[in-house]
Length: 408
Image (tube, rainbow, N blue to C red; front, side):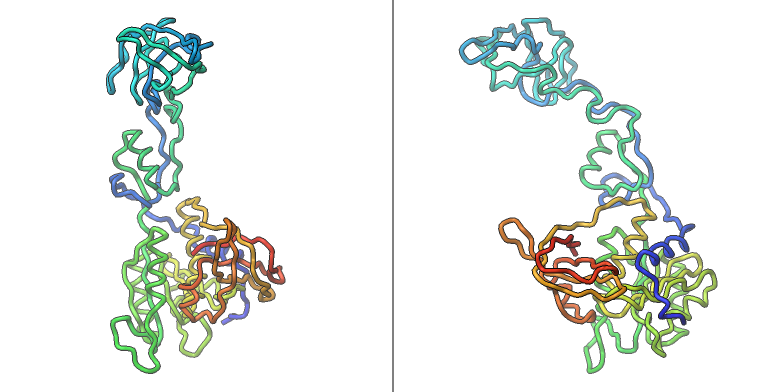
């Protein structure tokens, strides 16, 4: 089975992308109200200038900035008020030197004006006389046409995750529907004679299915969806039938458990039975998560994940998240903080080690302490806020050094 011919983490990522390089996620069109957290499947170019007119950013008066020069509390500038601009209406008067027009926030700047004086820096003597108590510079308190987005410019890149702010940009451009990648679909198969679902009574020797629910959370957070989840006993024919069904219904098949080399671990044989490339990775130099399987069947990705919850989650975040983001062109930066290590910790020689840590903050500085325990202990995750990565060439980490902590 060549299990012990493990590959590095980087080699595993490379092989994953190389063997599934032809696979593409489909694109669909959705209303922008339903687009939150989806991934743009097209480049968005602006067909207008945003804003499409010179606009005030304050309530105040449009003036020529030169008319304010030398103004002070003791010697104000005196201007003639010749009108006002109402919201949503055109500015139909032009300004000459010595004149001012009232403009509300967001209103159109009249021709001839090159600045906006805030209303709190002025005083009306009567309906036609304005006193200015502060000098202002050209362009002050004005957003010019196209300052935000110019017509024809690339407004949003393909692969951009849609946030509330992005929805606002789409609305500003008059785009009500947008093309996005369909949610990556996953089919989760938990294997093992000892595994039972959470609704079943727990009897001696049985274990509740933890991985399915933890993985489902990671999938939804990534922007995917779970099309089905099942528990399969340790039987080759049953597993193969379920994988065949999963390949028809999903983009990615996750087989939880059955990735090691025990006599009842059939994942490797099942993946190879579908032809194609079959298993191309069986074993990664990563801790935890060494017994990881990557394969292809019927053009789809099949992943054999370790049965231990921590291992399964670490492998998912390391490989599957990376694969999905690469395919969709997503440029999300994993949430992380810098923290001072509060402990010495040796690494596993020749393997990339993912060490879970607890974080505490003192005077604005984060400190990290290790979360110790076996990879089968789900409490490790509930008690940890993140993890650090110790590369294969490193001997470990030392108390007092600063490291990036990737937040869970």
